Image 1 (tube, rainbow, N blue to C red):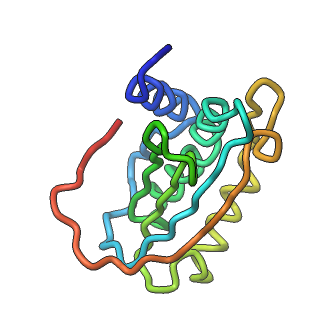
Image 2: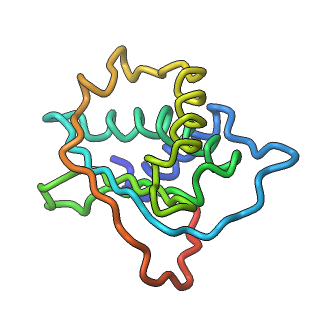
Amino acid sequence: MPSRRDALAGMAGLAMLGGSAAPALAAPPRPTVVVEQTLLKALPGKADALGRFLAANWLVMDQQALDQGLFTGFWLARSAPGFEAWDYAMQVGYPTALGFEDAATAAGFEAIRTAHKTVLIEGEGLAQLGRIIGSQRLDVVAVRGFAAQV
């Protein structure tokens, strides 16, 4: 059985297959003002498949939003073994205090979502793999030295 690190590295590689190469003229970086976090819980026996679904869909679309300057960053984390409250946490950074509710951000991401063709995992989508169990907006207080990439 692969380690979590190997699984996440595989997910990142899968996401890159979805066309996340940076465009020649990527938007300049903007500071993160707010982070929105979404927690997901996999259905029994579906945690790995849910992670592959998120990598093939959410991470691909989020990379496009980052390239367009709609997001300031994003990350997907998997819970530690034995932690039962949630399986995945998706965090997205935004350049305005309105986060995703900023009209330009919402419109830009809706265009990305509309153009994206959902990648099913073994014929299953999000509804068959897990569910969103919570979402919250977090004000950024301080960030130092957090530059990990998988």
